[in-house]
Length: 245
Image (tube, rainbow, N blue to C red; front, side):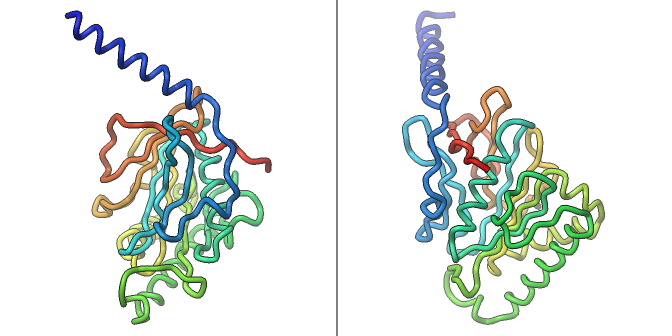
């Protein structure tokens, strides 16, 4: 190893150590009604080591934006989802539906499914709403903007909810919503345990989907956001501190 290579490696290790130190303690979460920015369609989900805010996209001018969350057990996905649902609950532009057997605080969602039958019913109703909105010319004119009268519907599919539904019907409905739901204002948020791909992979054609990868239980809440499905090294963020249940 040359002296220049050794110096570069030492500098890289030093930067990593400094970043870890800055991310060691999570910052307190701002009030829920300050997390969602209606001008950009994004939700603040934490901070990078340099103090800038990490963002999860909920919509853009093309419509609702889908998201995948990949996390090991204990890595902080439940806390992250709690932040996202709290932000949506505080806004009159969004409504939250969730199929997840655990970790959803009472009052944060408009609809929660915990059983196989409830999960299938939730997906069927979401698909029906999607087709109803797509048939309305009002939703086809101009850039997408959610309104209190036609709020964005976020659908969180927690780890296990897909296998709990356990049928080709659920898979078909997920794919249908993923490929056609954006202009109708239906956003899928899929949680998967382990590394990518998640247990409920969104169709590869949904190349706009944002991916949030959380680290390990040794440093819960630390992760990175990925665009265009390319997982690579990059700045990591730390989610806000968990709120009292």
